[in-house]
Length: 105
Image (cartoon, rainbow, N blue to C red; front, top):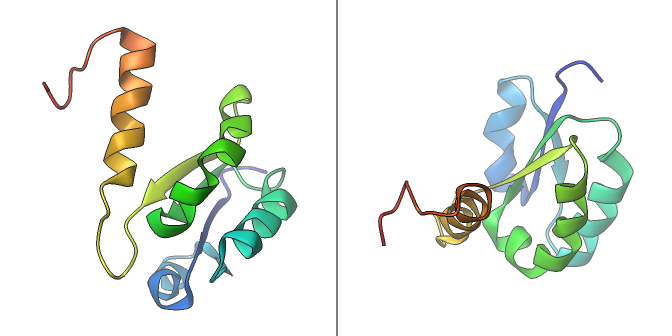
């Protein structure tokens, strides 16, 4: 599992990552994304997940917070950011540090 990286999302959003050597796993629905994540979680250290799939899977993704790997990160899709990734980052920073040092809100 040395440094393996994957991305899960709609086909258009993940295609460019394949050129960079990232393992791509297409998932058009929340159910498919959940299924893919269950299958690849032990094999990859970092898994990118498009925001449109990450938001409805918020509760499911909490299980990955309990382990060192994989690190699951929300990223914008081809259609742009919904702001979900920033929300998750802000929440994690506040939990870890007790203060918002990035967004100052």
